[in-house]
Amino acid sequence: MNVAQIPTILPAKTHNDKQVIEINNLRKGFYQQEVLKNVSLQLFNGENLVVLGKSGSGKSVLIKCIIRLLEPDEGTINVLGEDVSALKRDGLGELRKKIGFLFQSGALYDSMTVRQNLEFPLKRIKKDLTQKEIDGKVKEALEHVGLSDALNKMPSQLSGGMRKRISLARTIVVDPMIILYDEPTTGLDPVTSDEISSLINEVQKTYKTSSLIITHDIECARATANRVIMLHEGEVYQEGTLEEFEQSKDVLIKSFFK
Amino acid sequence: MTPSNPVIKVIPKLREGASKHAIRLTEKTIEKTLKASSFLTELANFFLFFSRTITETFSRDFEFKEFLRQCFQIGNKSLPLISVTGIIMGLVLTIQSRPALAHFGAVSMLPGMVAISLIREMGPVITALICAGKIGSGMGAELGSMRVTEQIDAMEVSSTNPVKFLIVTRVLAATLMIPLLVLYADGLGLLGGWAGTNIKGDVTFVLFFSQAFSQIQFIDFLPAIIKTFFFGAVIGLVGCYKGYTAGRGTESVGIAANSAVVLASLLVIIVDLIAVQITDLL
Image 1: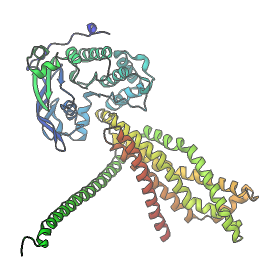
Image 2: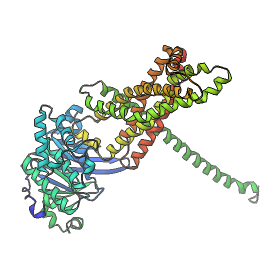
Image 3: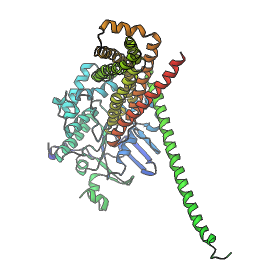
Image 4: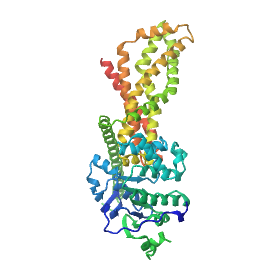
């Protein structure tokens, strides 16, 4: 698949759309170092929001705070109307069922086959499904990422791009309302990166998901973004549409979009 | 007193020396305090981990399939190593003990002595130490690499409790499987003992075993088996703790595996010491 085949991205959302994630004045530090300093942003229903930034600008910390893999030091995070910091373990578990997370490394379970990797979240999140229904959903998710024949392979038998696609299949198999992508194209060749970007758009259209895409890959941002936020040194540096970023005269932004 | 007085010349140097000494002392005190505090933090974290494991063990939705898989990994896959170790343990013990007993004309006591040594002490401790090496390091490395490659985080976001799925199943499997492996090693050790006896003598299988078991009492057997459950729990807990709390870099996987073996082996010896003291009181 080449760039020309990438499905067209949906138009930028307006502030009249419903917010699915709202972050206000988020701060997070480790020891003496403050990684996120007063970050505020919103993700609207059905949009692809790309968070751009250099390595070390706090992008991955931000995305992990949203799903509470990291506890924020200050600020509020509302996801689907729930205050994430205030949730108890059961409540957090219920909220996480509605959120998909694509890890930078793919994070496939090494000891399980591709089928078991996909069944693992499915059996735990959708407990009322029969084995036949589970098989159907696994097959559908794998067909969606174009890897139906990888069903019985082990993760060690897959290439980097295949691992990423299987990981995306594992994310979408549970029909999440929001998907958080952590550097979806990092470490992949340009062709595979385009394929992943294309899949992100397809998933948005097919499953009507809202996505927050953390990346420093400008091609991925161009292919997927409805709206862009740039993080710099732990703060929101600029927010706008892709066109606004492309036309910006700011040196830092230009260094990304050259 | 004149400025040329040598005592006055020496005083500033003494002051300088004293202040340097004070700075060095303060630095060392800070360093020792930090070390003590990090040790206490590690200890507190281990007890928190232990209490969370206990709590999750008795909560609903036990991961039975994963528990069976871990029993297979720990039990079945350790059999070759334990088999070789068990036979050699009995063989060596018999060969080494024979001359000493022969000196007192007590060679006929050899089967009983071998059986008591194996069942009370050597079988449990050596098997546990081998398991600390094999199983402890395996758990430390596996969970450590799962931490590094974000697989544990992936489990959490899949609404799965990783402590319940990864830790409880492994700790319980180790607690259950290590006593069985010890029994197996004891049996093979006795077999090795019989083979060792026949190197310089001629004792039938039935005679060897009837003499061996005639010397063993219930008090020899029960405490030895009870302590192996604690060995298993310690090995499982330490292996899981070191792996689960591994740092983010790949280097931390090696550190987790290594420290799991060292700490688990040390704790096995300490638990054995406590068990021996308690058994001695009975």
